[in-house]
Image (cartoon, rainbow, N blue to C red; front, side, top):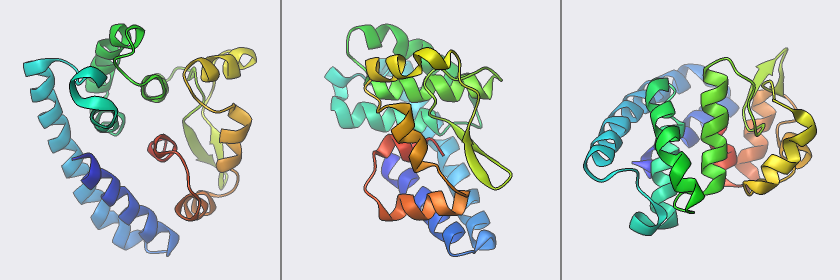
Length: 182
């Protein structure tokens, strides 16, 4: 599920960079349908076994489950419920900290609140800018505690127009979680 989601993301990015927004729309439609099916399947897993923890499914499995939740913007209630499930597991190192940070930001911005970790960006006047961030003075302290790079480094990746950011991201080696911020 996670691999197909990432493959469809790459197809959308490729279409956008090449100027084919019309072609991207078809892929986005497929991607959205896949994401809905992925959420349903993950919810069945959660109902049967609980949240997929590192000790149960390994780091890769835990991150794959997280990426499904991270990309479930069509179902913010699901994202919030996952964050609630992850919170106590985080204290026991059963979920990757960076995954919790990214989903925390996604849930915050989807609810109109400032994000605690500064992972979510949007386009304003043709440039990528971070969505509102809570308590910027302590931002890097929070990011470090959750295994994220300093905000200034992360922010540099988003310099420019969305198309420039996508093009750069397709040619540079970067953390998988950064791709999920889009």
